[in-house]
Image 1: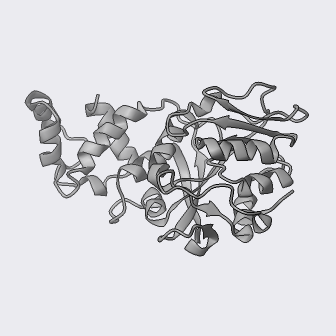
Image 2: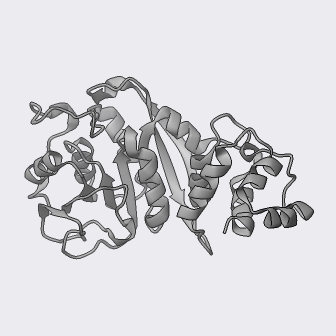
Image 3: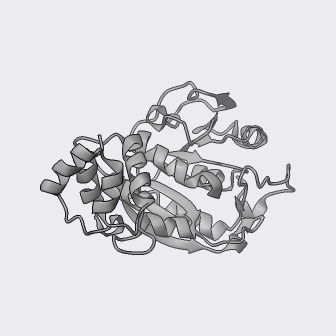
Amino acid sequence: MTRASDLGPERWLPSKAWGQNYLVNAGVIDKIVDLVPIAGAGVIEIGAGRGALTGALLERGHRVLAVEPHPESARFLAGRFGAEAGFSLLEADATSLDFSSLAPPADGAPPSGAPSSGAPPSGAPSSGPIAVVGNLPYCVAARILINLVRTGRGHGPWILMFQREVAQRIVAAPGSRDYGLLSVIAQLAAACRLCFHVSPGSFSPAPKVTSSVVRFEPLELASPPDWDALSDWLTRLFSMRRKQLGNSLGSMLSPGRFEVLRAAPPVPLDRRPEQLTPATHLALFEAWGS
């Protein structure tokens, strides 16, 4: 099977509008595949592109459902891997896809390489753990992550590549400059670890920024919040990140509700949003955000 270092001539020019920076460093590809914890585990790959990572996953015996929104990339992947057992392909947008409905093909399932659109490919579902892996387009990476939080916590781990600055926001601690909405959402949903950085020269074309790989272990939540409503609440709160909570919540709540909160505040109202832990943010939202 062809590896990244053996790729032939480009079949199309990478598109900036689609965020296409193809991973071509075989060493980095191997490090990403090493993070999939169980040999032969099913994998949902987001943004398979030209299939460098797809090929490495298949070589290791993983069953792969490739999710690719770009029509030319999907056709290329179908031609390259369509005859491979354990490969299936879905032409879809990962920012709005319901990941809970997806699964790679099961062991022994026939090849399913023709692109399907709008619904998971037909065939026997995968059993056992399902990892989510992807070199995410910078322009939609945060949206994909939030959608995974909403719909993909039944799968795991997630092994995802982001622009370094976004990765640093994901793992940032309370009180740090990078801590914000994405930190709170990600850390409520999963244990997050920044694994390693990836230099621009590992891609074609080379981006102008460094990338980073983050590994997420989704957490079991007894009562998951309304993630969309929580995101809206945090967006408003962190838009006033330098204001004390007494000022920001005073502008977000009705006068009557704010007076009730001020009479028995769950946290000191002279604190700022960036100082609260993810758990405290969740408790504040559940008490006052709905």
